[in-house]
Length: 305
Image (spheres, rainbow, N blue to C red):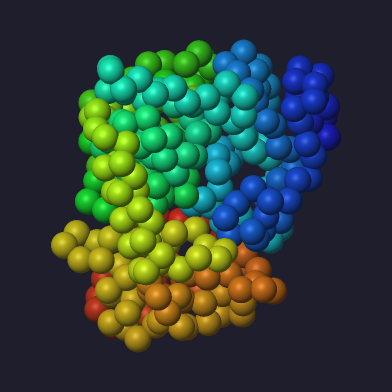
């Protein structure tokens, strides 16, 4: 099926939810990359099931975009269907008495952390420093400041867009968590999650939030980036290895290794997705040459050879 025919079928099933040739730059923190042929914004489980039916029937290329905080799409774009969760998937409920937060997959992690803290639910403050979504955090077992998603996740609901399309409840133990890893696949969408916290004074939670924000501003750059580019090797850090190879400030076109944190790659004005991709490969090559360690990207790169 052609992209036009695919888009037309999606528009007939999901009126008002489909956009064509939408720039991925508007959907990702790198603010780079070409157009996504078809972007579908789904607001509930029924719409997600309708999308899954079309995707599975026509075996369309699929990209779950989420908040785009760990994503780099090639300048040529993506000739398939991009999925963005909205509506019901943005709902967040805090139950301090039960010690839980129930969050839709599209809830941003800083919002989750701040609203939980304001309500007096502690233990989720580390999320304030991670610019992604709840769904992305489950899929990648996102972490920071000594904690990971798997430590606070009780259960999540996952929909397979190439499977039955019905949300399946999965416990934390079912998700095969590891370092920046879970069993959630590229065709699956985390629609909801329940996370455990501990009742605490809102002021104490707020102080921990402020400390995470202060540390992040001191040690990590702002601007157009996607956070950590490489996974940390066992017993070491990618940032240290990149710094030891003398690569802080290394530039390819409009992309450069941050002077503040070597595992953050900045996209300056005029940068292209190809610049960032070439910088990733060059840093990977030079670190291997310097230390013998082959860094593995954490950044999800789409459309590059």
